[in-house]
Image (tube, rainbow, N blue to C red; front, side, top):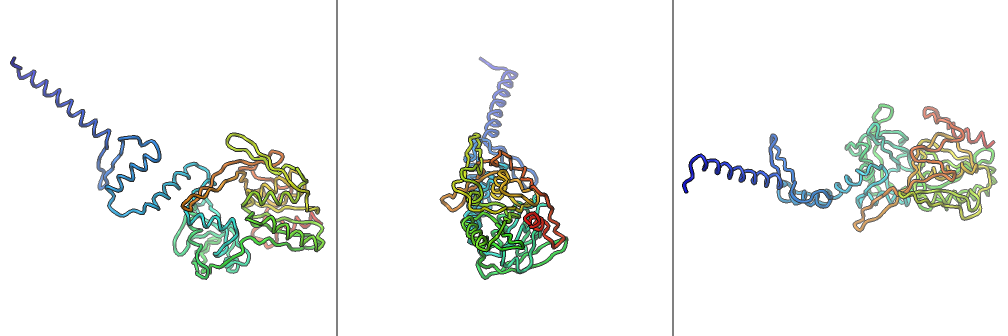
Length: 393
């Protein structure tokens, strides 16, 4: 049978459409390739890339095949994990590289070599500031002050998101130096500071006028509760009649240490802390011993008093075992767990929210002092301490 030209043409067009459709479909389902300027964009759509592992595996294969330069896979993995964890949206849930983990545990155990500063990220202004200096450190001796902006470290600038990275680069071997460019009240000041071994958080007691005892707690590091007890007993032997506990600029630390100090003050079997996890399951921490502190207490706080410090201040305020003087506290009412991984890296995860014995919320609320006194930084008079002494007199 003979096929006319018109019918043959229709068949040819139909076959070509099928072939073209098949080719286009194959291209779209495997890789889509197009150009913009000098950059080649490739969107991988073949296979399951909905999971984290599958997506990274696909990208890794493409980079290994096509990327022009050498790659540091360890750094790439760390950056990928950091991005994944940070997307949780919780500022206290963090991934630490092995080096960062060493730095972090150094701060919590009190074994430190460095210049002796605590730092904070000012996200509003995207800068990193000095929150306080450590006693007898290079930073304190050189005159660094709270609220100083750290503009550069050894000539390198850092933004608020790079607090851990800056901290790691400031740290170094004992006897070496680091250059800091500080901005204070709009003026730039350059410092060269020597790294040295520093006792991070010494707990010391002194006797003020009118036989008033004074103990400053810079943080709740490992062993500080026992140091606090020793300092108090030494003050008691000097016949103090009252006690000031200074928690200003204390950003927290180990919760158990704060609870142990709370136990020194509250009656036995008192509720010290209420916590709730993601399932709303509550746990209640109670005091185990009779109190050892039997004098009137004033606790000094400010807007940098946070976390474990707020546990101590909140519990004692609820039971009216102390008067709180100063500024409204920071409001960090959540607890983290720290996991150490096999390669030395770590993961800090927010696992619980906590409440005072009266079930007052602290997170993003803070604790309101019984006497609100603003610390005027411009004056040399410590108005908060002055008020505490006045009340105890």
